[in-house]
Amino acid sequence: MQITYPTPAQTADKQYALKKILLIWISSAIPMAILAFVVTPALISLVNLPPLIIYWFTVNLGLIWQFVLSLIILKKDGYTINWSSIKKRLWLQKPKCPETDKSSNWLFLWVIPFILLNAIVSSGIGFPDLDRIIAPLIKSIPQYDLSKLATPDFKGEWWILGVFIITMIFNYFLGEEFLYRGILLPKMNGVFGKWDWFANGILFGFYHLHKPQVIISTALLFGFIFAFPAKRFQSTWMAVIIHGLEGLLGLVIVLKIVLGIT
Image 1 (cartoon, rainbow, N blue to C red):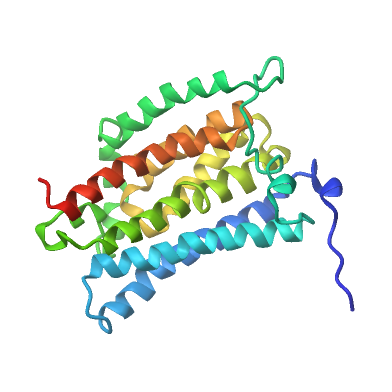
Image 2: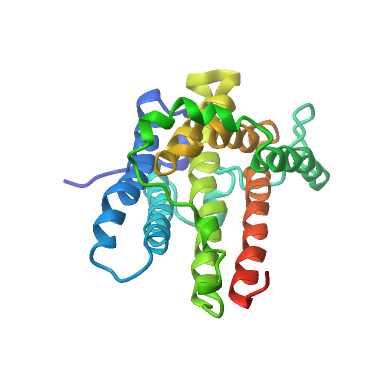
């Protein structure tokens, strides 16, 4: 029996049902949790590498899976996987003025206040005490902090830079942003109306099951900071820039680690 898929024209304005939205969330969040808390501990006993490195590798696999999942969704929605076919669907376009619906590169300047908000949350000025709410629930779960890579042990280990570049590509563009702001956000209005960006932020925050210690204090806030400008200006690039700046700062840190600069 031949399977036929809908055409992009048939699905362009069709919003996702709540069931599909939640299924996509489950398909991205649960694998990350399994990789972090099932696969990583299993590999730690088998592979002669620091646990933090093993966790990093497995999480990267989860980020790559999100890109693959996005392609599967686009294919099922009837899209040919090429730039001209998917860029409008994923809002990979210049931001649009909400009042005039006209595109302008000048609107990219709106990322500045959101970058500042992102920096405030990242610095811990936000709501770090809120994580105490879930601390008793996760005290027995292993927690991995990639900032602990900043040790002299990794001086001269240039392969770390390569791994981090993979992380950057799939964390800040082809993974999280591609799926949450590209695939999901444009299709959530039918269920959540004008609060679709807020719902998207909630999903993004609780997607971080692989890092439960940051869900409430930072991940949820990041979700709102990334989703709101992407929705308001109908451009996923807004979120990619705001989120991706974090990756550029991380790149500097990794370079300093590899070069042994303290």
